[in-house]
Length: 198
Image 1 (cartoon, rainbow, N blue to C red):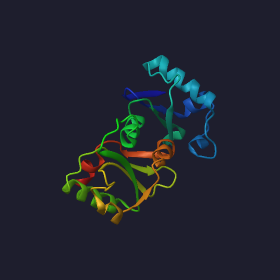
Image 2 (image 1 turned 60 degrees about the horizontal axis):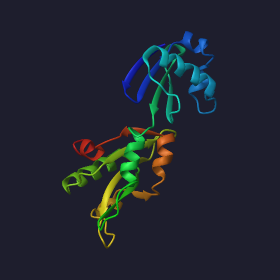
Image 3 (image 1 turned 30 degrees about the vertical axis):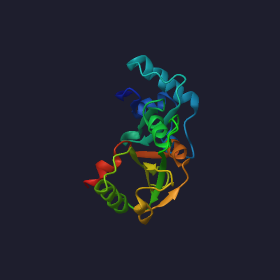
Image 4 (image 1 turned 30 degrees about the horizontal axis):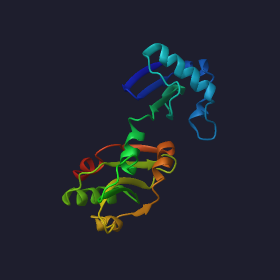
C-alpha cells in the first residue's frame, strides 16, 4: 500500500493486487454495484492512520475508488469538515451570514457542455464577478456540468448577472449536498477565474 497525503483533508491510497487480496477486496469494488464494506474501509483507513497519521475517526468522508493497472485500485479520501467542500458549500449557501439590507444567495447552474461553462465564465469575468465559484460534474453520469456561484441580491431581489440563464438551467440549492456525495470536484475554488482563460 502506497499513501500520498495531498493535504490536511485529502489522502490518496494506492493498493496493489496483493493489497487487494490482503484487504479482501475484489476488482469489482470500484463498481457502484459492489462497493467495499465499511469494515474493509475502516481497516484500510486505520492502517493509513498508523503509517502517515491521517485520521478519519468521526469525520464525514467522501471516498472515491478507481481501478488501476495490475488489479489494484486507487482510493481518494476527502474529509468533509469545515475545510474543503463543506466550507465551500457553507460559503455558497450563506449559512451563518448576518442579516443585512443587501443579501446574497447561491445559484447552481446545470450546463450541458464544457464550452457553455467556459463561455459563461468568460462573460462573468468580463462583468467583474469576484465571488466564490465551484465547478462539479456528476460522477455517475459525467454530465451535465454544475457551476455554483454566489451572487448579491439587492432590496428588490435582482440578480446582477441576468445572462446566467442563457447558458444553463438553475437547479435547487440542495444540488450541492447531492454533488458532495455523488459528484466530482473539477475546480473547487475560483472556477470562474480559472475557466475564463480557457
